[in-house]
Image (cartoon, rainbow, N blue to C red; front, side, top):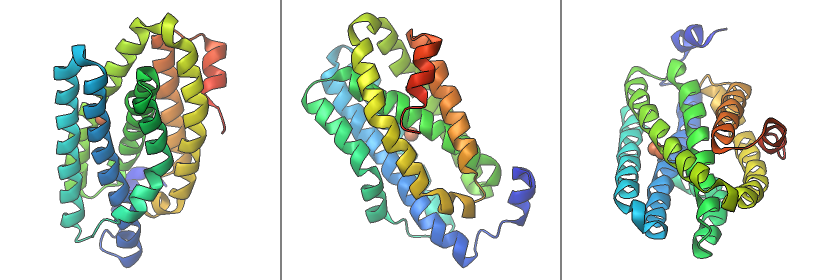
Length: 228
Ligand SMILES: [Fe+2]
Ligand SMILES: [Fe+2]
């Protein structure tokens, strides 16, 4: 079944759909909240980019509000407790790096991994979303591309100094991402999304970004499949 056919048969008000949506909507809201907090912390670590990073943070706060509206629209209460647990490991990596002033690691987590992941998941969700969420998500995805771009440019400019740190961060973070995806596979399926399609989109986008930053093809192959 194609996504388009799927969206025509999805009952957005059925109990199974709303049950899965509680967790997925919670994850999205918490993900945007963490993105907001991460960019605020990055603005303190990179004072020369403060204005731009606070602008990105503000966009993330707006995204959170937009997705809260999606939940309200389906009369669903997001499961934020589940969502906080869902992000705990990733959050921990970012926080430890921020405390140690490891800017490259922070950018790998937020501006590469979270943004690539968000774009992949939102793109996969778009064709099977309800009308309201579809409009909201389409606008959000556009913003996420510009956030990915910020990390790419910064890491590219500092490539020689931060190459090893990026590799270490990659090894640490990607296995966490695969674990997170596995945890929500069934819920994504209920919403009409296919986990493999999200992984494919993520790996393609992430690999392309690593290539722009300066990594070689063999390096990218090793990095993008770490822990999968
Ligand atoms: Fe966002
Ligand atoms: Fe973003």
